[in-house]
Length: 420
Image 1 (cartoon, rainbow, N blue to C red):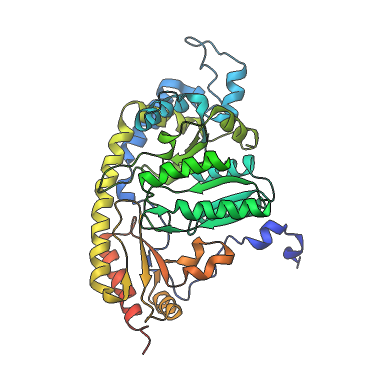
Image 2 (cartoon, rainbow, N blue to C red):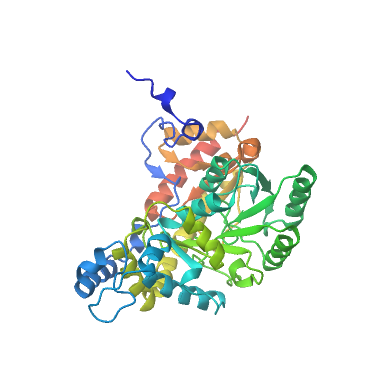
C-alpha cells in the first residue's frame, strides 16, 4: 500500500479535518453550531428558485449575468461578466449593499463594496490570504472561531490572543499585545473579532470598547475583520452598532452570510468593506464564484423584505430554544457550572467548578452519547490549557425534548465527576 503520509503537504499534516471517533454514537449533539431545520423557509426558497428560472430561463444558470447591462434580450459582454466572476452576482451585491447600508447607517455602500462568497467562512479565508504575509501579526480573541485560527496559521501569521470578559474584547489587553508586537518588530496587520455574540462565549463587545478598538486600529495602523455571522440573532436586549457602522477611516471589513438565519446549504456569504480591500479579496479568489441561480433567488428574497421577516421568524425559534437550554442547565447541572445567559447567538459557554474532574466529565458524557465542544478547541495551541474546564453547548438545532434529555445526561456526568 502507498504511504499516503509521505505525500502530504505541511498544511495537511498539521491540520487534520476528521476528529477521532467517539466511544459510542452521538445521540445528543451539542457540538456543532447548526441552524434549526425548524427555521428553514422551505416554501419561500422553492418559490424563489422556481420563479428565477421561469423569469430568467437559461440565463439564471450561467456563470455570469450576461444581460445585466442590456435591455430586453440583448446579451452584453464585457467587464461586467469578468467582475461577477471575481466579486459575485451583481444583482445580489446591489441588494445587500442597500440592506447593509440601511442596517449600518452607511449610505456610501455600493455593489463594489461587497464580494459574494461560498459562506462567510470563505470570506474570512480570502481576507486572510489577501492581507496576511508570513510573520505578520494577527490579533484574535482569546477564544475564537477555529477556522479563522487555522487560516491565519496556514499563512504563517504571528497570532496573538487578546483577553475577553463579560464586556467582550478588552482594549487594554489589545494595546498590551500591540506594544509587545512593536517591541519585537512584528507588524500588526489584522484584528479578527466576533464583536456581537462572540464565538464561543456569546458575549458582545460593549459600544465604548468598540470605539476604543477603532481608535487603536488608527493609532497602530491595522485593519479590523468583524465577523458578524451571529449579529442578527438577537433575542433580548438592544442592538449594538457594528464596527462597520462606526468605521470612518476605511479600516473595517465585515463578513456575514445567510447560513445561520436562512439555511446553511445555500452556501452564500459575503464580505463588505472599502472597494480597494474587496478588490484585493477578489484577486486571490480561484473558484469563479457561487451559484448565480441561488444568488438571483436571494437577491429577490432581500429585495422583497423576505430576509428581514425570516430573521424575525428564526429569532422566535431560537429565543425559545435558549430558554429551554438555560432552564435545563440550571436544573441538571446545578451548582457545578457557571454561565451568563446571552442575549443572542447559538451557544452557552459553561465553566465547570474546580471541584469537577474535567477529563472525567468528557469521558462520561461521551459514553452517554453527549457531544459538546471543549473550550481548548477555540484557542491557539500555546493557550489551549486556558480552555480546560470550559465547554461550549450548542442548543440551536437540538429538538427541545432531546435538549432536556441530553443536558440531563450531561448533568449526571458532571455530578459523577465531582472530586471526592
